[in-house]
Length: 303
Image (cartoon, rainbow, N blue to C red; front, side, top):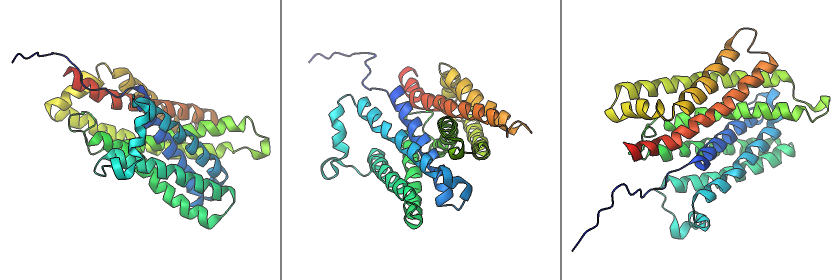
């Protein structure tokens, strides 16, 4: 029997920009919703005026997600397989966790927003706490999906879910600050959100940036002094073809520059400076999502 060997035949379909945007939108949605819950669930009254807007922003961002996921399947009708729980579910698979979490999270946010709109404090608190857990779980699972693939460096790390959650917190607040500022331009003065409230949110974002940089420093040390594959990922992938989105877009533009602006005494509490820092942080996390999704497949393909 004759055999034919085909070299350099790629049998996998790597994730691309749609999945990177999906990761970003899920994170921004979760971060925005956590801000919404601060007033109703965690007893911070000054955030109550923006709770409904923040929750609705989170819902809108999350509703875009199924479109991207279904589009990425190639055979778009196959998304029904994950919904037919009795026939196609495999509960050991993180994808099934994600399907359940995304559906539950969306429903929980809608119910929470309804009770906030009705000023039903008791029910808003109950469903708000539930939705916060689902929001954290939804973005936690996105990190776990990457973490549990052994051959997908640099994603195969136990800090992956924490990195995703921290990025979600930062990007969610940055995006919400920009949305609130844009909303103020269309509302009557008496209905606008005070600049001081947006400045206060930026302080939370600043500490999220500090923690994100701490996690990245630990990953940098691990890849520098770790296994050979980790060293190659850092210097051959992240500081190679993905240097722009990793070093310049995420680390410098999205983390170091906004942290510097917010930390400078006298500057960090100025409304225009806060909006600039929020824009940098919200867009810089996109760079992280891109290298995280595409860098691992690049490493698999060329190394």
